[in-house]
Every structure is written in C-alpha cells, then in structure tokens.
Image (cartoon, rainbow, N blue to C red; front, top):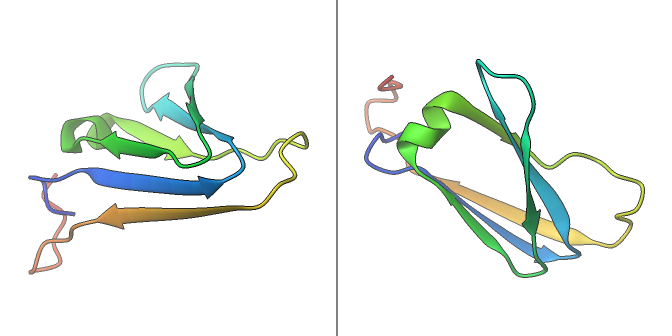
Length: 79
C-alpha cells in the first residue's frame, strides 16, 4: 500500500458492525457501519490495527462492501 494513503471502505445495504482490533492489545472496538456508510482508516492506524466485518445471525439482509487501497508502483510494502 502507498503509505501516504490509508484505505476507504464503502458499505451499501443492511447495517453491519465494522470491528477493529489492535495488534498488541486485547479487546476490540466496534463501529456501526450504516446502510450507506463510509469508513476511512489512515495509514498509521492501518499499521497497528486489523479490521473485519464479523458475522452475526441478526444481520440477514444484503450488503455490498467496497474497499479502496492505493498500492506502490514498485509493489513493495513500505512498513
């Protein structure tokens, strides 16, 4: 990924939880991802946190998610 940019996640459809976990700490933070939500994760945050949309039975409706990332031209990860 290009370290000048993070990633952007777009969601359309039923609400879901967007979960972030710190690599070195226990626990997680849940963010509600609304029907037409956008979440922006800066580069520095992406270095130390993972993200996921966990499965829950209560969410049965349809949803489309698109995640945008910009990659380095040389293909190397600039950690």
